[in-house]
Image (cartoon, rainbow, N blue to C red; front, side, top):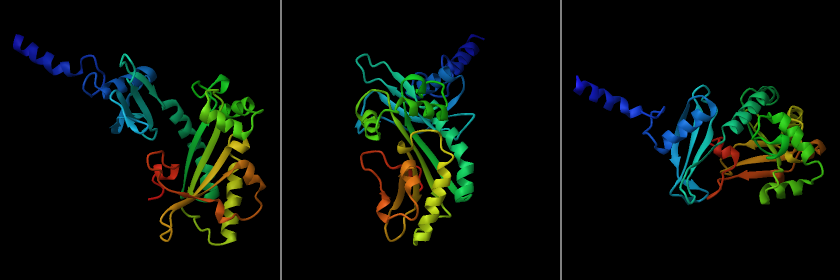
Length: 274
């Protein structure tokens, strides 16, 4: 009987103090327990563990993608950062932000499919105010945060908002982009083709949240052609789109290429160029 009890203790000891299937107190185990404690549900890590922050590898830095068991579409980042004097992990994640992005994509998708065709992919990225009522760290939804952030930045120029977003900690940002890949509407051979794209983008703009029209963008992706070797993108602000009356110049098409050492453009990150 004593031998049996010892054996059971050894077998059961694997999960003692840990609610995950990972090695106790490993970075993976700490991540999933942190997420469960914070949000009250189970999560799963996916992909390889990343050790780089920026372009440099860190000894005490771990980053992974994850998703909640109840919604495998919702992919987000979770980070353990122990590169401090005490080497204690500072934990962070983008679960709430990723949830808001997914909700916005789901809201816009029916309109995009109706305007551009059923065979259309859509994506959303945003960076909004990180202070006050509009803070995306709070529980305000994306449309509400857009409206509040519009008021918060009403006395700022587009250039001042960009400078604030990139170079200081004022907490005032206003950037919202919708990416559209209409697989059935790729032709830009004629002015008529281009006019159709502009008309459809204008229809799509009607369904965007109430924000600053000079800092909200529609990005229409055109897959690479054999002759060019890369894709291109028509990126226009809602402000500029309203002023466009007909076709557009090819000069407005921006090549979509990988960014060595940096963050790749959205279409490449999503595999739209394949």
